[in-house]
Length: 450
Image 1 (cartoon, rainbow, N blue to C red):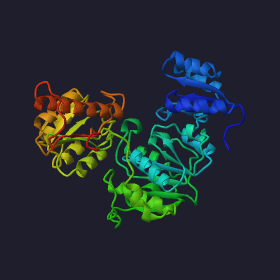
Image 2 (image 1 turned 30 degrees about the vertical axis):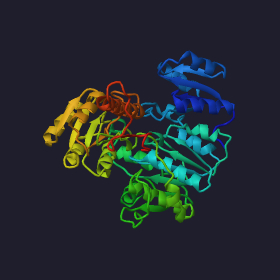
Image 3 (image 1 turned 120 degrees about the vertical axis):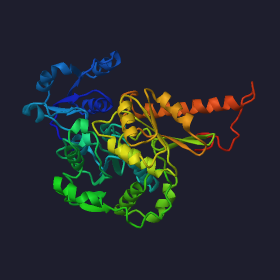
């Protein structure tokens, strides 16, 4: 149905993946589009805009940009708090725009841990039930490209981050799912309360016929922030549903959430176990990479907060050697290390905050060392690992001190595992002869089927 009058002047603030999709979307709708970014555009990007008569404004001319636009859609990572009140009145969030144009019901998922896994698994399960699903949002697929798609669907399944939710004024998903909550993004929000308030915006504009799915323990706290008018479905770890045979690709609480959604959509539960067996989560999420000379390697680069790392450690059958690093995003990781003291064999600290992490490890008498690079940390872990040990990359921090994103960090870890595997082969192979993996303790993902 849309929310903007014909030929409205639309500003796109930020020309990343979502900004490019938004510019394309509003150009096709016949609006006058202006793009603003803090960087200089590449020649290809300038040509792309010029062919569509889309203007570009550098962020140094922010005041002029707002004067030229009737409405402004900012990238989620942009903090609008410093804007004037007149400028703020022109702001419309990407989620609000998506809701206005979406033709089918929306299932939206947020939480501190597990958003991407649950969004992916739910999309796969609903597809197995014969439903047509379009998945996107914070998972990496721009949501406005979904409503611009010519593909029919029964549901949109969106991953929604706190940064996308915090300034919403109308977004109303048919099913809103809050998986969990723990401190994170305090470098953006300043306080844990503000971060939680952003998450609660997922429920703020739901209707009575909608559904809210969240842990039982969080219900009273959500009610303090917003009015819960939708039907509430509580997730409780004590529910006797864990006996169902689900693959160990995600945590039990996530499966309980998925069961709840399948039930409220009136889909037959007896098919769920069968469909779940064919599900897979994206890479870098507690991914078993290889077992080499009895050492098992796990890539959990997606774990950028302490709660995710702690969950990963606790899910393993033995105490791992943990690679801990990255940037804390304003969260104090001392308490995490205190909790890890009795659940890890050793901690190998790496990256920009390694010295502080190492000092805390010493405070809690955890065997530890510190290295500037992931490579040095990896081989330090290999050096102390014995057959039967697990080497786990689960940094509890963002990747931006050393890598562009968590995927690049996870890929680098996988390459180091492959390098170690190659070294082991050459060490044990007769001179001049290429050795295949023959030791029962040696396996690589992709060779042994993971």
